[in-house]
Amino acid sequence: WNEPDFPRLSFLNSFTGVKIRANLAAYGTGYPFLTVWIQRRDEKITAVLCRQEQTMFVAADPAADPEELREFCLAVGFESIQGDPTLLAAMGLRARRYALLQLENHAPDKPPQHNSPQEVPLRQVYRILYAQPEPDIEPVDPDGWYADLSHRIRHGLAAAVTLEHAATAVASHILPEFAVISGVAVLPDRRGAGLGSRAVQEL
Image (tube, rainbow, N blue to C red):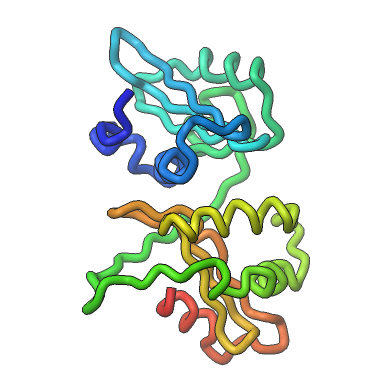
């Protein structure tokens, strides 16, 4: 397929679809830890699947075959899977529900400056993100997280900010028209002063 054609697939403008497109923009398909497959029905692309490490991302058109997607995902294997809850239910997989917030952004007065990983204290970002254990959020391996995010930042496909060594916001998947804000956190003893909102605005 031709990646610039992906925006024409409306299902790839979904939350999971944006992650798939950004993964491809960041790495292409030349790395063993990232694999991409497509499902076709009558010469039409009906689903795109992407496995990064052991996480599977699935985005699909309503015309997709959920049973085939299920059998394929189980055959290639995964530890966790992300996709629209309705799609995952149609695939016979139990989905954890989540709230998706959409932030309408206005064009900035000046073009964004892409910081290098050296300019963003990523170790501090990680420390703030996982300062307080959350029962529904499992901490990720810090070395893998650092390597992935620093790679994305270098290529202008991710961004992170910190404020006063106490608040952070991370956009992990950036495309020209969309971005996924994957983490916002404030250290417990600094909450309630608006630092989280300021971090998102700065991001």
